Image (cartoon, rainbow, N blue to C red; front, side, top):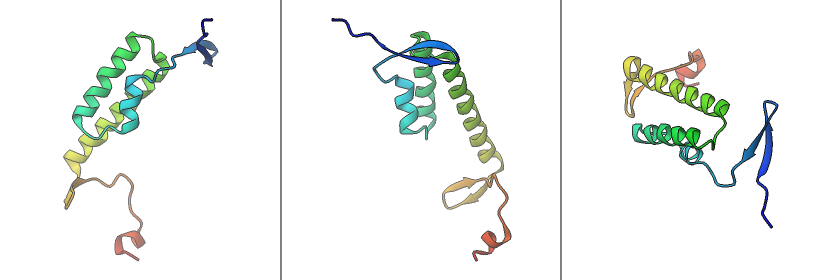
Length: 102
């Protein structure tokens, strides 16, 4: 007996869910903390797209999020303030009570 693959509906279209975990999901789940991990994520995502392991809507969202992450890192490197952990950029203004430590 041949087991049928699981089916899911995404955006009104039926998508066959692959039982094995796609490589790009494994890399993203462990966290993208280095340039090497980011490169591996992009490489795996391209492979997953070409193998039809990831629907293109999800791939687009993931790669756009990765692009935003890179922009944040770039802003941190350019405009961040030096501290004991390297450069840090405050993305949200701090309240006066948080600055004074009360």
